[in-house]
Length: 237
Length: 329
Image: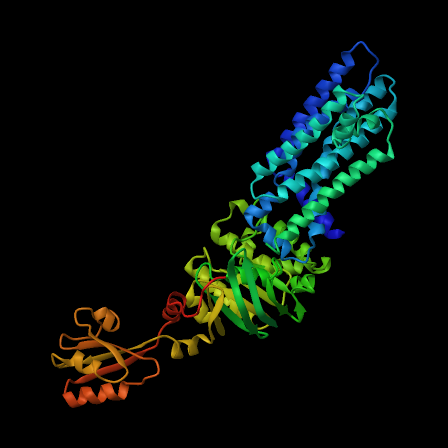
């Protein structure tokens, strides 16, 4: 467990040794603030869920940037050899990198906490959807990070890893489109069920359903497991 | 300390390592030589548990690489050919991180960190970001990370690559000093390093062992021919032909006009000194016959000197002549 924490902490610190963390946090904060202002100016009753709904889409673009280097860079620089000739298991390396990337998503969410704080301080809002939205974003973040980590483990090229992650998440998003356009269609509903984007809407309304949590947990564990298998495959190739 | 038994590795249809078996005792430094693509790196990656063999196994410090991989890795310090570094970290942070990954107890980390910095002669660069280090310094960080947890077994792939001559000498001395308490496999293309450092040498070619011996014994017994240098005062015109008729002499060549070939820049040689270079088969000692012929013919014997084949000669011969059946499956 200590080694997982060690790797996670190293990964998290690495984001802040380059411009990427600062650019992402700045862009994220700017967009979140802009969305907050736009929602605030609407004549309808103030609701937070539209802000977080769009932030999930923004996360789709951020996920490849956060995850693309996780394994691909180690593979291309040769430091993967140092990791796996140290007394570490593939699960320790995978979980360490996953938690490091997920912690960065956690920081992105932390820096937006001032928005609901302002809303509750200067008005009155239902806090259920706020907490639900943060749980949803954490779940989506975990799913995106595990998928991105898996894509990064497949290649030496960070660019390829980034495109694979973005492409995969786009497909996941598109799986939900038919269900949104044809809500009565069973086929569209079935396809949409496999999309990450169909499992956080209820949470953002404040209703955290166990089946959605299990979906995100399963999705995340599936791609972490796949990453471990890819890392193990170096031994036998 | 290291026991390799019938190790083989197949990549697709190519046999990278073929039935390798050797042992390295405690305190021994084994030179692991071979041309590029011979299977050295693959073997070292198998021994460090980075990859698994297709057949065979190995035991490091009593632990099997397949059954007890984590324990093997605790006992190994490995410097890969491409030094594994995180350029964004400082040398101190990087070595601290590696020490923690390799389970160095918290209360010993500071002490081990200082020892590793000392091993790599990195004290004055400890707080420099690795990205800003020269290639030589990066190599030294690689050596430091390999010894940070004070493992009983060290596997070093090209530790002197990128170092200047002074650093190379220091690295050789450092490796020799480690041999008191460590078992070392040293792979390098710098053969003088092997000659000066290693107690034994394994040469592989196309995945198979083609020679295993001490560097001195290899020089004395291996190789197709050894050379004799003969210096005389008054050679006859047919001296070379007569020398070549001696049993065991495969070639005799007059070297006049190339004094450097006769013995070091022509120092001390006068105009009436003539040299012959004789190639002889390794199992034949023809010095007595050559001396007798020279005296009987009245050529005026000045010098008769036998040159052993250098490790470089042996390496080239063993790795370019198809010394083993190298047909790949």
